[in-house]
Length: 442
Image (cartoon, rainbow, N blue to C red; front, side, top):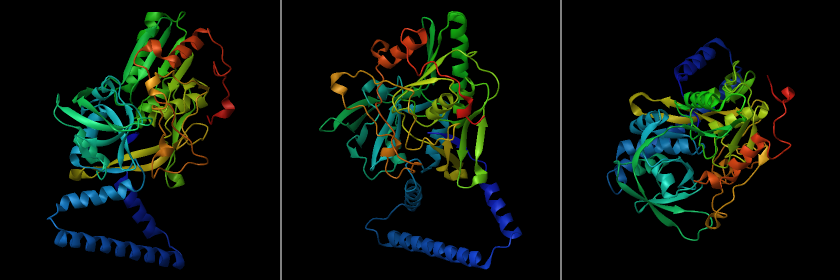
């Protein structure tokens, strides 16, 4: 999920007040605005009446603070699956997570039909090692039903002291009955970028976009370019499969690492003047070497920004299966000592002006993994389009796909195909990409 700190709230409110005092509104507009405000205050009075009735008449004495927090969270989660309230503790945990180290199981989750849905397990974490897969639905945590909990409440229950066990009950497509998995909590230290040399090809795996990601990409490119040698180096594979996203500025920086010029991404809010465009600066860290980007149904948000930018600029060939389709920006708005809200404030668009929302990135070369027999039909994700209450797409919706990456590289058919293409062992009309500047708004 894409996150960015918000410092604009006060200025926006002050600006609105200034406009109101400087501009004369037509009488009919003023009357309509007053009527709308009156109706809003009437609804707020209704909330107050219900709140007081619950406090005075509910069968047990309720926790006032919990009632208010649940009401706020209910308002936000009714907007879309990615907006929510964060308590002070949850806000602190989120800040720690973006720095790349936190306690927990190691899964990126969202809500679907009142259940916690796994967007993707993070590589080399307790959840991944225990066999949790993208698309799994968590129905119970230590025997307690998830139905009725908010996403933050469910996440809080999954956290706990390091080296303690938790039992999660999963529902997986293709299996008739839910089943239990025991996971041992641990400190999750996210090395967001790992790399290795595949003989004459540089392989870079990006598991999420946190504060360390661009530095990792840069270091990996520099090290492998030096070790392999510029003349021998055939190119790079950037693996974004099952990468759930992260920080917007890191997605922009990673895209910029492979581009010399042009737009990387634009974000568009409610008003036209809120549109922002982010452009590449001169300097391709790979010196123009061929690049193949791997994506699948677990590649979401920031991953889709990178894939979309490199695809539109014909800088990389995208290989794999259709991505998750999360094309919205969440702004983290701090509320002082009261935590923060995560609010969807914009949609993002690729350089050619395409929205990914509930559509995903369609790869240039579609290639599915060969699956073990027991996983056939069980590792697909419906993507953003399958989430209840998601923002509607511009046009026909279709996102999500197979979201499986073999643990052993020897079984990784997508990676093998990418390596063969870079070495010229296999030919494909979509590789190498042909530059077409008319397709991109530079």
